[in-house]
Image 1 (cartoon, rainbow, N blue to C red):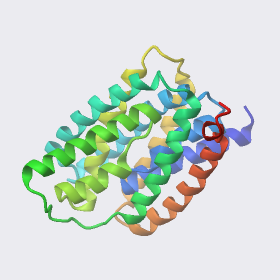
Image 2: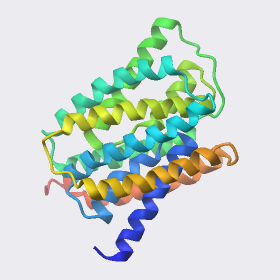
Image 3: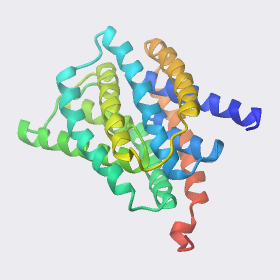
Image 4: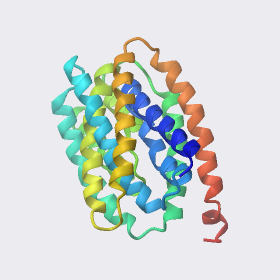
Length: 258
């Protein structure tokens, strides 16, 4: 593989880690496009390989946030267990879909992630719903995030963080740390759902993961010093551009030529 290609992949790996560490989500959604369009992997292999990258990177980021008290374990485990069920089911359902369809769905999810980042709130919001309704909404969000993880290989932090802020009332920094625990659980379950269905380049995945982990360690340290709102806006604009590219590359799904 050309040195320029490897360098570009390394750069994206660092960006993925930095974004996860600083804003608790969004970065992992780039993993599949990098694997497909930079490293040239088939869609299903890329999605399966993205999950250990996302999970391991999130685990390291979660450890950093836990050390400074930014993880609410009860919420993380409750949300995470529901998400794991959805993730495993989504991975099994993915066997029924063509790779181009999965990438098209990923492009749409990326656009949704960009909108979520632009509209998200950085302060804790006292939940307005009663406890039963709030529990149902949190469970529904966890299940939906899990299914999307299994189908298209995302971590889902861009949905988890707003849910924790708006539905649970967590402050942003604690929502970010808690989100990383949920993403770790989610990705592990999704990868289990893909077990035995595609080949895994363990060496390449390991190198990419190591670079992303370096990024998340740096991002966790920078989180207290860099304005998250401005970062999210810039990253959201970047996501729109990548999503447009992914959807264009898979336009045959819309045109009926695939």
